[in-house]
Length: 219
Image (tube, rainbow, N blue to C red; front, side, top):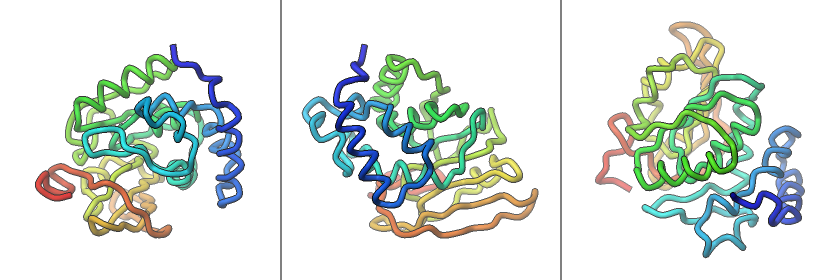
């Protein structure tokens, strides 16, 4: 069983840093303060787990910088029991934050090693998202529509699959742009045929690989 009390003081310090950097949602900060990020990184990086920076998790992927996790989560405007689709389970840390906030989480990961590792860690911590191994760029049509969709990798454009699987009134948060830099887009579905897009600053994510993202040969 993962020790959730280890590094409690470091988590509290991280929460303070994120608040100073502009994260305002108290529920998001509380979740960051509770979820043990050190459990989602390789043991060699456990002492750096509460620094505000991304860390490698294998297969060329990273666990996002805590500020980025907090900012994307804040942009989702979450409430308990919302149905949330996460694209890119990765380490499982963002998934845990969503679960901690009381959401019904559905998460897709294309890399088997990360999918299985995240599943084990999340089960160990008592979280119960639905996890799937597959092409995240296609979403997860079986459980659509979703109140919120969160994408944790950079996309060249907004996949039609995400727009179609988003409920009317729902929000999609996705980094869109080039391989080396993206703009964080908040997409709100205002009707069956209309979506509003708001840009929320520059970010840098690993590329979203798949049929409606970057091809496997890029990035």
